[in-house]
Length: 107
Image (cartoon, rainbow, N blue to C red):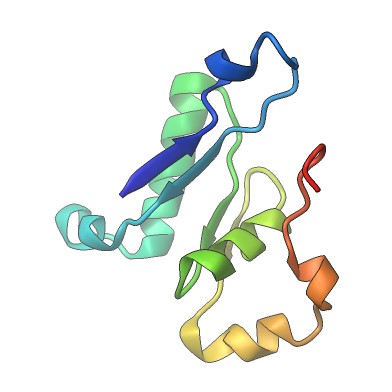
């Protein structure tokens, strides 16, 4: 499953600042590419930089919510990995408010 929201073309008339968000479930790709999720993240980051000149943020986690939270605190050009056994340890220092991804212009 791959989703992209919103395409820059749809919002270009409204604002010049666009943050493209891509959520990709790579569970089926692990076997096909013979790489672990971290290796797939490196491959995706390399492709986006080489083809489009864009640094990307990748986050790998046991579920989509944790991956989104991790991506929100990961700087561009980096990958954050949260293993299932480390979820509580990763979440513990974060307050409920700081754990939510902040998006400019979104309440």
